[in-house]
Image 1 (cartoon, rainbow, N blue to C red):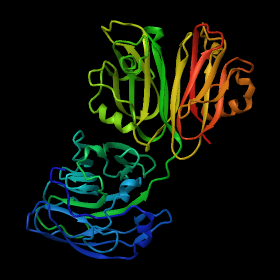
Image 2 (image 1 turned 90 degrees about the horizontal axis):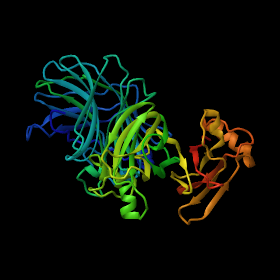
Image 3 (image 1 turned 30 degrees about the horizontal axis):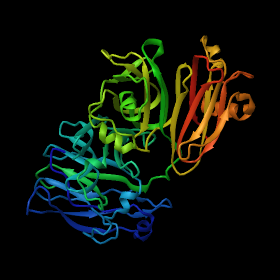
Image 4 (image 1 turned 135 degrees about the vertical axis):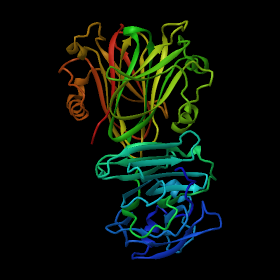
Length: 512
């Protein structure tokens, strides 16, 4: 906001234990605003609607108007209720809210903009300290424009806003992804059916104590210098719920093979699915493969280009700003600041995309080994659902890596298609591809396949469920359907005859 950040705290502990300990019924607390008036405190009163605890352990304000009264003087009003019912107590600010993923949502209505001043706002905020906060609000300016506004003290992200229609069904959301340590501010204009991300904030950008926990605040804000009476702001619903248990998913996919120019460029396709956006870290690595890992025949300089269909989204000729922090966040091996490899961080909605590993302009070597990697950056939002790589396969195997994340098994379909590409009018195909699936924890081979017909029923069912094109009955394409525990895996695709040819390697998470 144009004003300093709001300070009087509404504490919620996002745990079932506190939810069960909460008491229902209307309560009134006295308080004050203490950020912009110095010692001049502006009194307010807060009459909470009935507090109900749902079976999912959520806090809900439902069907009631939240009213506040602000005395003379410019300033913010925080509508506060302590988690334990004791005004001013900070006991609920504990590390438990750091280790549990949660989603906080609010349905606000700005009933009346201030008679004087710049704007009025209602929303909510999550904070650890005055210098570590993210808030999202619905603001009505004196020009009549309604805006969704999010602000943080993050070093790399400032203010973001979007204008909305006066009659929009606005819902605001802050979500904490505990494993990835990311806060996402999002909004819905369709009654919560879908959410659009306005900003993501890695907690690593906050200057906080490692033992700190979160504070939640309902925010009622007015720049009016005069008194603002009851009925100015309505909050139809506010809830903090524990996020669903970590779900099984593909958290990281990668392909390593030769890349060159034109038709011989290494291209990796992937799809994301679900509501909202998926933050992804995308890398094309070659120089580091040779210098650090001893891989022979690498490119001296490689670029990364991201496409959706034929539309280029972005190109990276080096490491994007903030990449090193992102690499640590997703568990990727580090890239030296002087490397000629490339990386980008993208916010993608559901759809299909391709990444091209291209020899950079002026690179002395025009063909060499390269690695394309795609990492999820946080578990909320859309998710990776498949990967594909079409390339020329020679004596060296095509290496596909992936990570299954979550707390349950994931069913995965793996295919190596050569003869099956004849239906797409392609020639020079691998006649008999073979698949080996290897667990990275112990280096042991988990499963192998040469001809998919040996398990035709399972492959056909998984292909249909995943939306993969059908394989020709009796073809010598290879495929596996396996249920895998969370962990890292490698797929090795080879030509049984060691002859060169085009092959399509595919990886799908099978819906169950």
